[in-house]
Length: 506
Image (cartoon, rainbow, N blue to C red; front, side):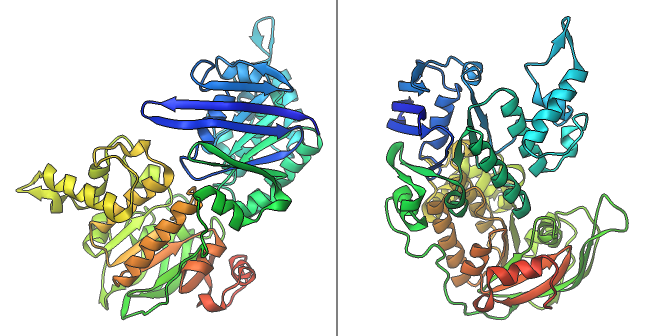
């Protein structure tokens, strides 16, 4: 198999930081090549060099496409060489049609005027290439995330992409959508398209990739055929040590019931008369981890956000904390009642990315850092330092801007924010989404310490191994209803999936 891409001796330095140190990366034509590494290992930087985001002259080394050295001054140069990158946060204009997105920046014209009819016809061709049956005139914002992902791939193919880079392509997809995407990538491989696949989900990497390259601290740790590695070896190469237990669950010593929910129903704020949660009951004890599973759209996030007072839909039912009835009408009510919520979208709901670590940590408990109604910056700095030390946040100081941190360290800042409120109940919605295995392990250990301290922890997760590996009991939702609840010792992925697709056990 011929070489499609060769990156030789790539070195990229930012002020005070060597992001890439003599990295070598070779990809053969028509293969799916996975690029793995912890957050901060250099994956994104390497791909930005390849895709022209970092132009020639800002790095050392060579890029060869089909054996010919190329110099990219910008993204258009890279696209002209057949390189297309699809980021985790899709770069589509939601207010434009599918066809307009496919040809954005290189519109088809006739006599200098955009030829919409030809664009629609050509769009149909490219949409068929990715198996997407939608009207090219449809507004892109009306499509689900899975279909938008396929539109991005069609857009890349319309630019005659020979090398397709996918950065965390399944982060927001359902299991069914992941299956569709995998099928499309295999078809593209058969047609000679080369794919570079970046993902923290090692089970997906092993299922789809032909070859795997691992980066650590900006250096190449090695390239291997997928047949020669397993998850354990990949993790060892990524973190520099063996993680013998990916899910370090501690034995439960549950105390009294901390949270009791009875006959809880939540109505949709957008569709009158529709319930997103229907008559759900459960309880969580001090010092245990209670998991909530189910497919996307099952109502998991709506349930915890409603209990936390952060969901706009009307709710009814009984909620007790430590045996006392409570009525949570707002986030402020929830915090005063002893609740905390690490939301699934940390960038949108959990953090202010332009602010520093100490300001984010103090955000949910400003009174604890104030003196006579004025923020005491010495106390706030001390709180930031404590969070950095306790949670092992990789930040130079409490003044470090949160947006500059890796995903795992941002998640630790969110957790630190809630720990300052001294919660009795902590909801964690997708706590390890988009986080590398090393950071996941550290967050699991933080959760275990909370359990030892008697906090009632509720984890919402789409990853069934995470639910089984970390939780003591698991409840499964399907279309807003509770379909099962069982101890983790009796849980299997098959049993959870059966309940998640509507098979009632409870």
